[in-house]
Image (cartoon, rainbow, N blue to C red):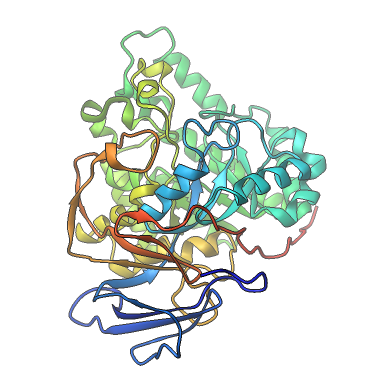
Length: 459
């Protein structure tokens, strides 16, 4: 099906699906998509002459929105790239991503951001938003970049690819500049001074250091102190803030109190923070090494409770692949990050299977709540007027994760060998079948995510 230049997508009628959540009360549901947008959803919705897709009793959910990925492209596409990254997205049921460039060339000017978006447009199978980088060099360009980006990404603490910022005065200027430009700050919240202190104390000069120390070298204290500072700047400048990859129950509680006080704060965690813990260090070795660190089992359950309560909005993978040989270096030299976009829905469904999240909360955290946390209109619901992004899956069909067969170039996974359920069988992006029976049906075709207009706030 070819797309008209005046439409958002294709025409499609999906019939014979089951409604979500699965169970005895799950009824039949049909979805009619016209020019890429959902026109009607319900048990009696007719095709009206549109092309048909028989769901065969699979359960229908909205396409997932992964609010945090690193595809390392342009610049390091040999490590992942938009081709493999967006292929992995479809494998995991994801039809929209928010991507962070944490390797050169950074998006610190409108021209650089335009060039990056043009690069992505030729390669992505999913819809995309690209975060601009919030560093001192980008301050003069923030207003010019604002119409093209959902938010500005700031590393308060250093991580793979970018160093953290020790200068609180500079961080305050970055938050103020974002507020003036009318876009949200998306923050990696770890306090750089605490990170450097604990690295010196626990890792530097210690040849016996392993990933078992990682949750101490990158501690809850570092995360909480960084979140506390960021919230002060939110209150001072009126900046909107999204805290990425919340890893501790204590940080989630701090965000809860800020929201209760009326501050404009959103947040996300990751599947690895929910399903793994620091106690997996012996089994996984450096595959467990991510920033912020994966913390205790109590933190995992606390984060699930925060998602249920709505204190943490969403689950984003922080998909950050590295070649296996890089991860197998000694702990201090091994890069942080893991791939997981290709398993996002099965990992989210696993939280339901275990009883850690109820079915509706689990779905919402990777669909409409994820979209709302980035102010992305038209994504994340099976409802009239929303984009025709649909995932069909069997909630009872088991499969075994085989890392070497996943789309990511890395060919490893912290979840290798896990038995999961909920693997997407069909993925539809704006009315186009883009994934079916384990294979992509398109080479590209993603479009930039719609953005709310910038909202300049008080100085």
